[in-house]
Amino acid sequence: MNRDHGKQILNVENLTFKNENGDTLFENVSFSLKPGEKMVIVGDDDIAKTRLLECIFGVRKPTSGTVEW
Image (tube, rainbow, N blue to C red; front, side, top):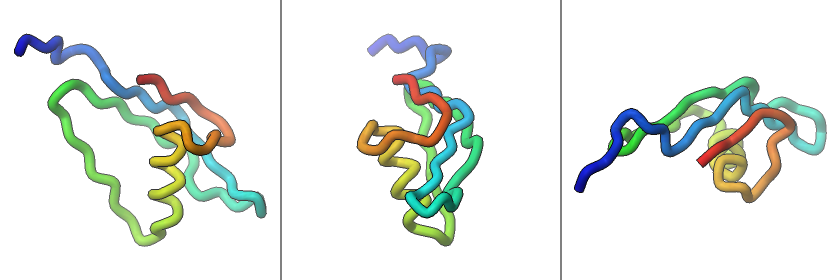
């Protein structure tokens, strides 16, 4: 299988999410992944990790920032 390892498959730029109370769960998260790369999301607050993934997969709309596949 011939893949372009320089091409990004996921690009997240300045992603911010505030809940309905106005509390910021995460702010200005930026990263990119290329084919074959792996990433682990760790942290104490489960809801912030869940909301981050929901924003990445389009389940929830972030307060600001962009996600490009």
